[in-house]
Figure 1 (cartoon, protein in one colour):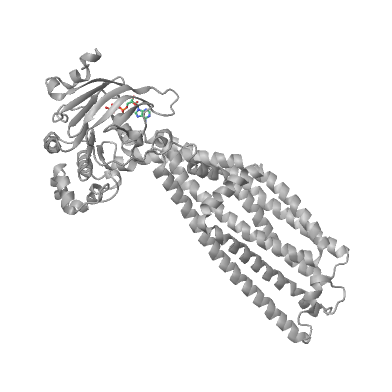
Figure 2 (cartoon, rainbow, N blue to C red):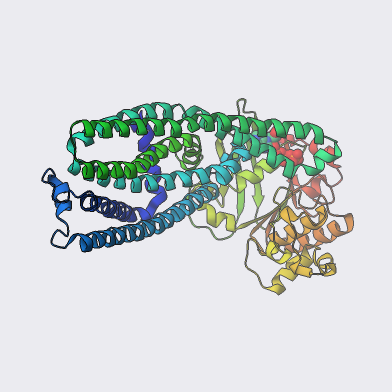
Length: 596
Ligand SMILES: Nc1ncnc2c1ncn2[C@@H]1O[C@H](COP(=O)(O)OP(=O)(O)OP(=O)(O)O)[C@@H](O)[C@H]1O
């Protein structure tokens, strides 16, 4: 069981430490050296006490005690006492200098390891296959990044502290051994027994630790909800209900954490009592077998100094057990083996030359218990330089087609061909550079309007203004006191929905993409502005490819072709001119004759 717990933990530690791994020997060496200095300082108490007690030439001493006993024996008593005091002080100063150096090294490693865990989590969230986000609760992810990653970092700091404490314990035990191997054997056996009891109790911390983690995830979900749904909650007067739900989630965390902390809290007093009993027994035993007074004192002082290290070691173990739920969560997110892969493909691509073909594409969203078919053998084409309207009733699968085109998701059956090349063979980064999407789902970033428009494409002020003019955004931006430097707030909260959409459209247009996708991109824009935007889009005709999704007849009025989706199927694909007289509802029902 210990191996099962340790092995992934060690792997995780190695990954988190990265290049700092080579500093670990330094931590151990500094720990050993400072403990050796401490042991030597304590050893010098033997001749000091010998002088004070008048037994400095005691022949009863042997081994290391005898060596310490000889230190400075050539001096007279007064000078010797002084010299010993100075030597002890020098050793203490040196030991603390080394301990300080070790603190700096361990803090440096801890900082780097914490950063590398956070950075690895961010990297994973950025690179992971998009379907992951369709399956996971954002609260769980937020909790891992904002909460559990800190505990994982703390676990690393605890491991580093444990290494220092283990080094000190080994050296102090070695000194004890040299002073009296019988007493040391007795103490070591006792320590092992205490450790067994401690480990058994620590093992019971894993369950409560997992509970804390899972309740923390639920609390993060509620927090996200309060932040995002502020308007919804108020408009429906659900403040009291939300308060009850939040308090209940928060109280569950409190209760789970209390259970965990109570169990953890038993360990320090228990180990202190057991250690004290053990050390007292060692002293009484030493006295009863006739160990000399200075040696007993040195032994007791060494034991006294050893005790915090051993206790800290044991506490490290229980702390890490207490964080096991957090470590499991962080390891789970960092583990790519059970996550959707990012889209593959390596063929280069430069623009669209002929067409995009959906060839009998069938698709279901992943990992739902019942996965309804969203697209059923859907076949249609989008020709280069033309504008294609994708229409259909709500839920028909229009946005899903955009998701497939952007390779957020992959078809279950059938193929998407770009100029005859299967899309899944094309380098996804290069392909996405050919596309720009303006969609009601793609929010603004917290920054200035200028930063938002240039989010996906570095551009000059003139280029940004030109895109804003095309997107009918320039005139309202000019009226803002800060103009293009206006900060839009989180998700563009300080702008109206129509203003946000126009900035999002400018962001797409500034890329001057080979393929422009507008997914309900102007549904909040007023009629006049929309008419002007449609004129802009007409200008692209013949030069660039445009895909428009909208429920508004006016928005698709400039399109060349229309693809009608219904019940997961492509009902018809036809030039818009051929069905120009039909209303939107009639278009939704329009079936290609050949499919009749
Ligand atoms: N992330 C998802 N997970 C599971 N099912 C989804 C997901 N997104 C969409 N669906 C389902 O896929 C179907 C098509 O959704 P899609 O968003 O493509 O429709 P749409 O035609 O764009 O609708 P609308 O006009 O309302 O925007 C719907 O039945 C929807 O319930």
